[in-house]
Image (cartoon, rainbow, N blue to C red; front, side, top):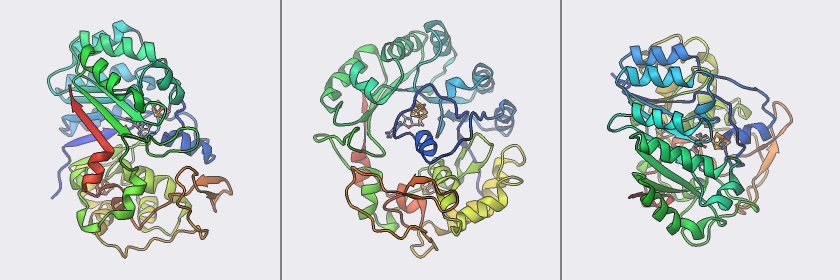
Length: 351
Ligand SMILES: C[S@@+](CC[C@H](N)C(=O)[O-])C[C@H]1O[C@@H](n2cnc3c(N)ncnc32)[C@H](O)[C@@H]1O
Ligand code: SF4
Ligand code: SF4
């Protein structure tokens, strides 16, 4: 019997930035015109009412601060005594709002601010105002909150790593996280010094027996803006969107059958979903199975040149989309190899 103890939720598809490698932007380039979608506030209440006391706001394709009822949502979460975590671009509201948020925090809570280097480097990749974000992060810490400075690493900001660590420490951030970008291209180039490998590259050397579920096989789940419940944030992107181009994928088929009436937090309890959903059971039962049927409908040859994304025509709508290049059968076999290389991909420094 599986029991859900924590969740990550995508609150909205709204955002004031358009970071090139964000999944949100990938979908837009692929022609998706869904517009603004917001997770229902009563869904947060339902989650809390089920006893969940560890809630992370981190959208796959949006910025939580732009949910129209973000204040109410934070109050429901903190009012329940839940642990609170939020990944944010930090560029909305004034210092007073952030100070007040800091005041609401309790031990163990944290907010991760996206600050990709110093001002000019940051604003190359992100459309958020660096000064605003730094001021907001400062006000949040003055109010008593614990902040983490997260920097996505590129060639254009790698020379600033030491400065970022120093500034982050001086400002009082709890930690500095330096992570590789999901992708690199000719404009946002891969770093030359501090460079591990992107997830896609790691995949090439990954062994199926080393898969370790980062969401602890149903103990933690990802909930999308439409209320859909997923084994993790990766499966949400991988099967919920990208794989629509592959109608023969078994996970996609199970999801499509179940998503409206069963795999949805507005209709069923999380424990019911993780234990009884066909999609969940299929993912957990097959994550080590290299022969899981995966029928890519792209039959061109893959280039090893990582600077150029592979684009292909989505067979269902004739639009150009990025091909998940080194795709194997399964999202788990792509994202969750427990190898030292993954650690090199992410550097977390306690200040
Ligand atoms: C889609 S964002 C949502 C949260 C928030 N809007 C933000 O930008 O932090 C989810 C996570 O992806 C991270 N991210 C953005 N660009 C990235 C990239 N090129 N590679 C890896 N992670 C990235 C963000 O910093 C954030 O932690
Ligand atoms: S700020 Fe966050 S959600 Fe918005 S485009 Fe950038 S990475 Fe995506
Ligand atoms: S990709 Fe698979 S193994 Fe990794 S967190 Fe998700 S369900 Fe778990």
